[in-house]
Image (tube, rainbow, N blue to C red; front, side):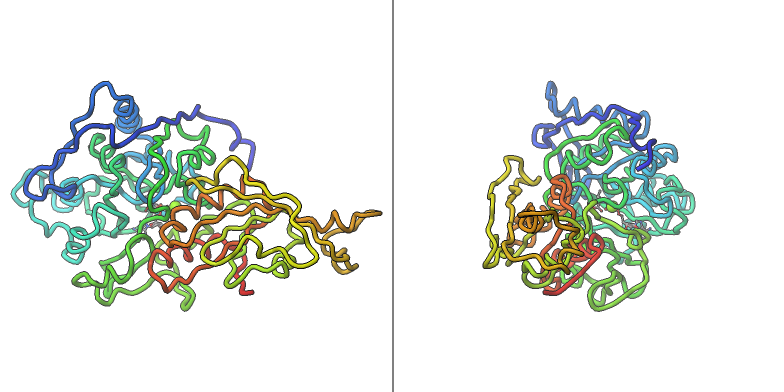
Length: 452
Ligand code: TXA
Ligand code: MG
């Protein structure tokens, strides 16, 4: 970090908003859903409403950026039609300028209005109601998965009102309708499409709590809406239906199988790098290092043994562990070793999971080759001291959805615990697309992938 990064530009405020206390959502005929015409009748005298309206005002007056929760991860939102506001997102995140942003909408009417600028149609013209303005390939996806964790690519309208920085130099833009009621209410009340990448500092794990956003962007943005932890925990699935066959550019909450059930999507191709193939990145964001905590991440297939950990101890004595489906607490303890302390710290590892700390003391004699790897030993019982490792472990649980929800949070908490290296238990990515999304993010975070 350079010194400019430490100089706060703003006093960042975190305002809690409970979406259930905002008021009443009113759905009009015929669809009676967020896809149709809807409105919100705000509760008066509710602090949640006051807080939400502060963000609305800021997005309307300065354009943002303002951080807000979605069902996937927290987003850093700005008025997608204002270049100065969108520039604020890139500056706060320190994001490369050629990595385009996702546009968030709160109704199909808002999207049609955006797209109608191709033809110059007015929103209230008879043609405006024509669904054809949204390419037919997407109709089944929209009716099935919106609002929700799916981003679609659309052709950029000729007379696009979007700030050029939203799309980079591309002729397409990504758009999604989030299902978080807080996000929907915010976008609806602002009345303008909101460009929003994940609200982390570029390269860091995506934020799934307001505290994560504050950690990365404190002093860099004015406002964070705190709507609690995100339910999904990994970002939206990004699909390109404009190519033949259509392609999944980023795995996320919507699975390949779910997509394949939709007309026109039976042959959808996987356009992201997975274990079996290497594909040149087509979503610009895919080429960057991502989701990385400060500590080095080792992604481990199979069991975690002391032998494996020992191979990496040259990197530091403080070891983090993120367990998923099979690892046990006592994996690292072998005959001749003792667990010195065993405690669960009072703070939780975000998303309600405890951070479990213990220290392993190895009784075996340190050899001179060990010595050269772990540094010279001093006199007396130094051999014992040198073989102590400090472990901080987070158990993400065995359910794939729970692992997705807690993953980024665990990486961040282990960083805060000061570990030098994090061993993460891999899962089978063939299980489903949420599992594929987890492994996709872990591969980008990990410097080493290994089998034991
Ligand atoms: O769940 C999500 O999608 C979250 C929340 C905040 O909505 N947003 C998010 O945005 O993850 P971001 O900027 O971190 O990731 C957007 C991804 C990037 O990989 C970007 O390259 C890709 O979408 N993308 C955006 N527009 C694109 C376009 N026109 N063509 C190809 N890829 C695009
Ligand atoms: Mg991101």
